[in-house]
Amino acid sequence: MSSFNQRLWTRDFILAITTLVGAQLIYFTLMAYMALYAVERFHVNNAAAGFAASSFVLGAGLGRLLTGKYLDFVGRKRSLLIALALSLVRSLIYPFIDHYGLLILVRIVQGSGFGISSTTIATAVISIIPVGRLSEGLGYVALAGTMSNAIGPLAAIQLSQHTSGLWVFLFTAVCALIALVMVVLMRVREREPSAAEHARKWRLRPGDLLDARALPVAIVALLASTGFALVMTYLTPYMVGLNLADAASLFFLVWAAAMLAVRLFAGRAHDRYGENAVIPAALIALATGLVVLAVADSLWQFIVAAILCGLGHGAAIPSLQAVGVSRTTRDRIAVATSTHYLALDTGIATGPVVLGVVVQLVGYEEMFLMGSAVVFLSVVVYWFLHGRTARRAA
Image (cartoon, rainbow, N blue to C red; front, side):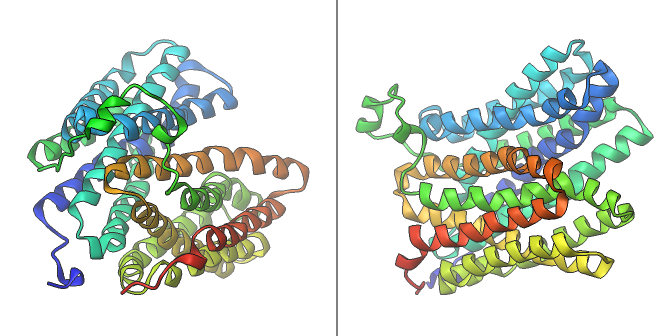
């Protein structure tokens, strides 16, 4: 049977996608609500409130580093069950936290649980997807993240405004419970570590935590995710300054719709025609979208920017993940997956901080132009580190 005709939407693939949606809803809901919660509950300043949200990413990075190394020693299904069960408990204890420092500690611990669960789910899904449909399958995985990104912040805003913060935490607890049930029902393919892996089990060198073969395209993903992070962080205050505050929600709606649309066919194009048919064009679209965003002064121009950014980011990230996985060996898939997500976390965490300085010096427009330059640079980096030697898919 042709690999393109092999069945993708199996029972376990659907359960894995549902699990991922539940885990990521916890992440996006709490990211959208935590800064406001920290201000209201602990009366902290804006910087401390921002750290209450972003400390989750710090924990996620720590969790991903160790997951790649020890996932198959602990067991994939066992790791998922433990991480999601602890996430359920932590969601329920938020209302009882009475000190800001304890809140940060819980955020970091819950972030590490998310890092473990999301990396494990991605690794498990890769083992389910037919080889010839890898990029397409990972596109649907990324599509689940897009759905969570749209639903989570909306749930946080609506529940906190019309009920109370308690219901936000109960919502994330329900998400964790649903994901936990899906894992119980799911058949997860395990991999027994080799004798050589057991011999170096407690060795922690860079190569044990990061996959050297996946690292080149992970660097490209880091640069590309910087553009995504700039939009997510600074678009709203930028448009408020232009007296277009009502258009910000429309921008994100169009952005999400573009990402949803492109992920329905970009993965299939990657599998059929090769990564060079997708990734360079996607990165150029994202960079061009940032340029349009920097010079836009009317609603239709902002919509064009949203379409370009959504198409570019939506196609590039899952394709880069597929390339990273395909460059490594089967026994290193967990480490390669961890390397990819760690690169994304790094770009999302550091990009707005580094380029945010530009806002203070010259303004938002120049910052978006610099972000565009970073994404254009990622096209060059991709070509020299991988693209020029990539073969067209059969």
